Image (cartoon, rainbow, N blue to C red; front, side, top):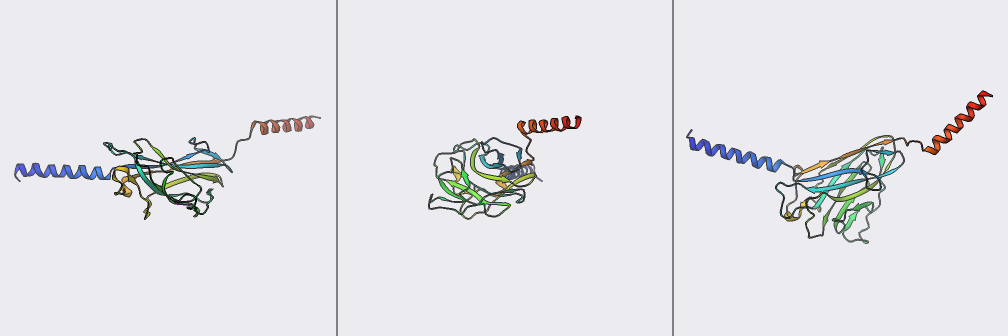
Length: 223
């Protein structure tokens, strides 16, 4: 093979590999985080208590765009229904013409105005929870809040929340500078989270009461 032909062939292979790697690399992140009701991340929660599941999105294109930011985002989330429960309410778009999601979904400020969807009615599934923003300013490079959902603990154990791609007909994951081009499943990195549901630790008052009861029993046995 001619030397120049080999050089051109090698160059084409390198370009093809670079294009494939670029395409395969995630361009956006959809991340779940378990938090207490004060927005603080947690890894344990007491049985019978409420906590919230929060979804965050981020534009991770490299090099960054001149107008960075996730403009729309959506995902399904699976969880074990016997371990936790979510109260579902019917959508009320009359109160907000753009909100077709369950009223139990609290939207992040960037997505609070726009087209919003999300179904919490199926135990074990958060279906197609996402939004398209009406803001025309870029969200920026920082991670931003998409939504938060209150969840109640039902049984002891670990509650795991696993996000996956949602092929919704009206909402998809978009960048603000590429609004007509939705991201595909392999262009989004989905990150789940989990929380351990534990028996509540006794309060100091309960411990003191138990100690007093034990002392009374001990004294009676001594008499």
